[in-house]
Amino acid sequence: MSAPALGYIGLGNLGAPLARRLANWPQGLTVFDVRTEAMAPLEEAGAAVAHSVAGVAAANARSVLERRGR
Image (cartoon, rainbow, N blue to C red; front, top):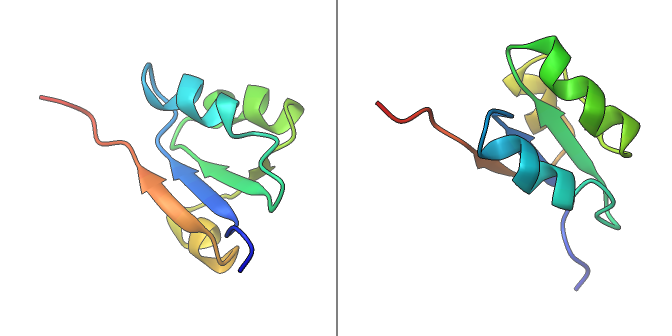
């Protein structure tokens, strides 16, 4: 069984560095953040960019969601 495609939602102080480590995942990484500028470095590193959370789901990716701590 091959590894799944990955999705990463939330590219803040914690999420961005973790997603960056997965940018070259062999089956692909799709990222989303409400701040479009947060996605640009990941796209340059090889990740696909989704324009919504639904876009990550449409990529058939196993997803990781980073929730902002309060």
